[in-house]
Image (cartoon, rainbow, N blue to C red; front, side):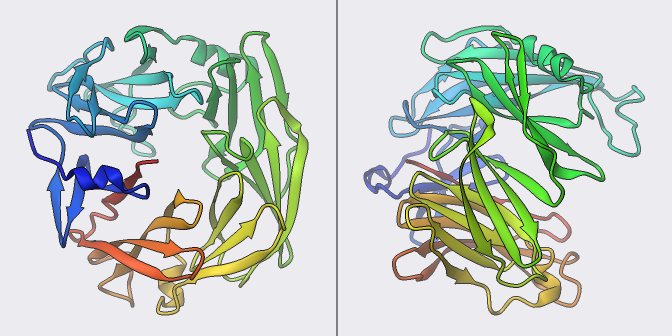
Length: 370
């Protein structure tokens, strides 16, 4: 078992760095692994209430307590392991309470047509869902996931156009939206009250894209709608998805660069365009630029993709990237860079960079510990 730096957990803005399925803390210019030998990270989801991560070892799921390094075996079944037929485990949804989690077990058969699917393969031949109660370390079948697809009338399975994004596990309400080839991420947003078998959906809007807040801070989801050089940002609640709680009219900095993502808490929102971050004050409605990559070539910025989160109310963290070949940015080696921005001063700090192998894409990430 590896040792840790206790000062990491005393910093209220601390975070961990991930590379692939491993987790590290940064000491000077070096990364030091924190997971026990033979363990891999299952999900980037951080369980704030217990300071734990879900990790995997030998197809079995464990809870890893970061500060004490205690490893606890969960009651979730062990996944099937085999050369031809095997299962992969994934965290499908985390309840907003932080107490309940839904895992998916995807079974693959290398001899099956699904696995050999040239368009979207390899695909699983079947999927099984389990609900895990972290407080009691108990597990039960979560076949009601298939019932959600049935209620909406949208086909289930790995090629389903319905993505489930938020779960209010106290009221058993699920939020989902349409996603897929040719439609991207689009409206309507579906709210499924599973206890009462009730479905509510937003209007279907052109040039609109939904974003979701799994923790329900400042609203459960937003819908952005682009019109000319303006962007409307509207907030909604999971219980009343047809009722707009509040909305803001924003300016698009440069029409050539599209919207990448939106993240928010109860005070601020960060609107991420392809080469620029804007801050929206949710109290005053004011919009301002907080970060812009002036060195980014337009051809490279068109391919940029950001993973962004708040460290606290005054700092954000994100993964940026560069290419060693700016004439052909997608090919060649990618330089993954973790950066932070002080929202008070707009000061940018580079935390860590990693050069990937040729063609391997992005492998650097972070887990915010707050």
